[in-house]
Amino acid sequence: MNSTAIKHPITSPSDWITASQDLLNKEKAFTKARDEITRIRQALPWTKVEQAYTFETEGGTKNLNELFNGKRQLIIYHFMYEPDDTEGCPGCSFVCDHVDGARKHFEQHDISFVAVSRAPLAVFKEYKKRMGWTFNWVSSAGTTFNYDFGVSFHRSDIDAGPVMYNFKVQTLRSEEQPGLTVFIKGEDGEIYRTYSTYERGLDMLLTAYHYIDLTPVGRNENGPMDWVQRHDQYGG
Image (cartoon, rainbow, N blue to C red; front, top):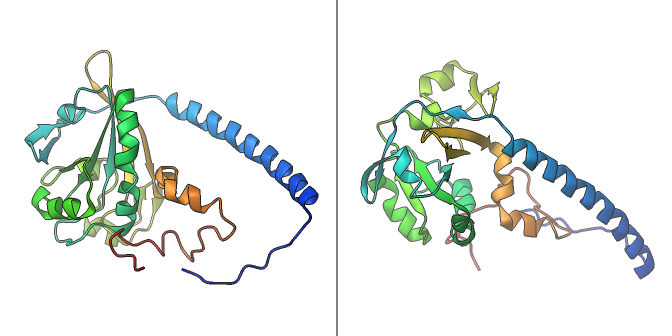
């Protein structure tokens, strides 16, 4: 992290109130804009999932329908973990550190959560235990799931690039990218994809960032998450 000293204007209590009132008006406008974006997101058209996907889980092989675990809605976090990795991606780990507390609430709102990685289950099972996570984490190894949902890419395609990621054609360096996809079971019993987000669209999941953004120093980083480590690797 940067350690640059903060040089900030100092003002009287009354002027501080005035500045805070101006900020509050802007925050209210942002809140209204965010509510409108949420409305648009929820109103997006759905697209049917045509392929029958299977996953390796701690309870055996399960299909996409079974990952809903009796809920109507399913959130899948695409966790970057390649078959030859020995540890999970620090950024994805940062995201998933926020899941277990939140899901105790949103699972009561007809929502199931599952993390999915391309590596076999045995590869990341111990890492999950090390991190202390209890959410469902499954493997899509041997299937096209990650590729179909735009978070895994073949090296030949990356090298030939650019490729489609985050709804735009761009040049990538890694075969694995982060993302999140939401599904719903329709009244017809079919499964539909309702929403996907990638890159900084995942920021809204990072409650730690929201706390950090309240402080005057803020994120204090040279690049996104350049200071983030796995939670058991921080010193002090």
